[in-house]
Amino acid sequence: MAIKVLQPGLATTVQDAGRIGYYHLGIPLSGALDQYSFRAANLLVGNSEDAATLEITMLGPKLEFMHDAAIALTGANLPAKLDGVPIPNNQVVAVKAGSVLSFDFLKDGVRAYLAVAGGIDVPEVLGSRSTYTLGAIGGFCGRKLQAGDVLPVGAFQGPSHVGKKLPDHLKQALPKQVQVRVLPGLYFHWLTQASGKSFFEDTWQVGPEADRIGYRFKHGRPLEFEPRERPFGAGSDPSNIVDAGYPIGSIQVPGGLEPIVLHRDAVSGGGYAMIGTVISADMDVVAQLQPNFQTQFVAVDMAQALSARAKRNQRLADLRQALLN
Image 1 (cartoon, rainbow, N blue to C red):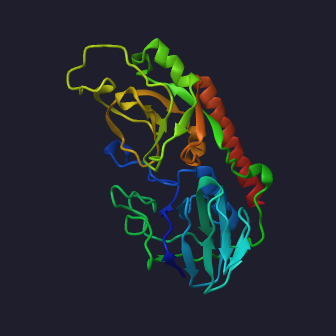
Image 2: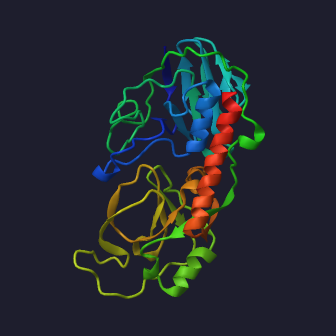
């Protein structure tokens, strides 16, 4: 059971829930950037919710199925066709051996998730099938897919889910303008009072450098740091610190110019001050932001961040309830 890659798309990788337990050794979590859509795709086809899928970024691949299969596509609004005939997103579709799946141009969002009943069956590396391209580990040969690759698919023994749909209220929202909630961090006080205000007042645009490592934001007012004596071991950049660990979602501002939100393939530590951290409940939202989309950062406290996480967990529970019954 396998899928042949006829065309790879822009950046199609194998991703699962992530590589947990190695962050302290410098190996990032990786895994699907939009974990909600990833889990929805798996639950639709009857997989365990952490099975390996394909994460498709902006430009879809062309795939030939070498066996009968059941598939579901969630996340970004990336119109798909099977043998040239449009098929619905957020619904399980039957595929015949020899059929070719292709995609039209992206409409909304950035990342779509293609789940196949049985899961993408590449070997686990450090407990995960996720691709970490910078380290060339996991996924299919540690890299993005290429034409000619043949992806193994696991056996599926469960009942057919063909026709099952994701309820409208449980589909991923894909707005073009968003508010992203931020917990101010250990080094927020390094900013001047005026820059601390402008960071949250300004509307920022997603830069073209946005990828699995981090999202750079532009067109806000430059941020200034309070003048201070550089600590021993820190560099000369006003945002330099002596090295520290980076939480996923942490925000750095090298040179005070453009905030960068670190995502799941980012390094685990380094020498830039973190002025805050995007709360975990909003990292799926960040994953679906296209370049030039407008974003406003909103300050929250720990209680609000925990409340948002509880609401996201409840939404995942609702998703399981809807798709497992």
